[in-house]
Length: 428
Image (cartoon, rainbow, N blue to C red):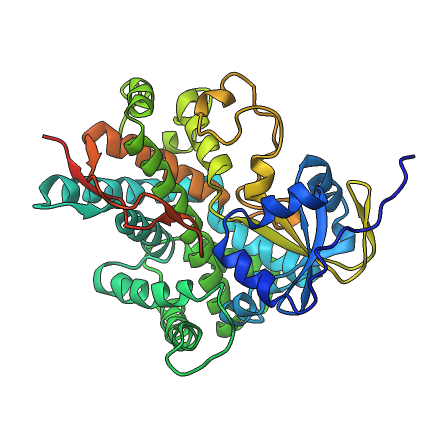
């Protein structure tokens, strides 16, 4: 057996400067991995934290589910709530996860697909008739939110817009300093959270009338015999909105950015898009754009998820001492899987955006844009369906061009998105 190694450390004690560097420097983890190896420990505002990258360290972590549990920073814990799936562990987490998963079954996705088609058609028409440039990032955010709010919760029009306004306030403070000073983003987010939960509980009390997928949730609760309170259900829906919204919006914005900045890439993907049917029937929706039928689209989505994953990493906390890639990590350590650094760690041109690598079998990385192990994101299948349908639906109808002289660089928190909003107009 290889000799076990001690855990390398940055030597940070208070972690104040480390936390500042983490939020300001996109290469924070990469610099430290280069110096200390694939597993290292630092401190973030007094919280010991272990960063890991590479297939071996990540596989070692996820293959020991009984020795780890979910964990989130304090700001996320408070804003999601103690009843949320994200903050639960053990049997309580597994039971509720099985219930919420009913909202993302294949049958549920088929039910949602006509609504997704309608939202894509509405966006296409808005872009086509706009009298000036529009921020595509904002449109992707509204689309992703509307899919959850309309197809899952059954909301429409003004009710949906009111929820979106508060949700944006809440989302922006998820990864912030959890001090509720008057007027601070965190204080505003706590107030928005109260309003959101109140609205969600009103939705839950209304008759379903065949709208959305909440009847699936109710059926799952009855089957599992879990006594959910209104407060409990409200927090699960709040998590559902975040999980199905922020990451999808980020992936769509980054994908559109790459196509608009690389005309050759757009030409390459359009050659395939032009051969695909639009719109799909509900029965076709979950299969027609799968890798076998749309290999270039699949490669494009995989490369976006590799190059700019919508979540920079995910967290676990050790309940026992672990060995990760030959390094001993003590009990009660927060471990962050650094996806951005890990996705570019290896041999080859991994710092270049090139979807073709996935068709040439050059990418052996284990991509985990939705997390991994027992706590993989429940909304993964819906997010992937939305992304594929948006690319095909939008590009079958329109040719877009980016407005020059805008900042195309990415803001990283809470998820990657173009700084100036990716201003676009329709060609011709």
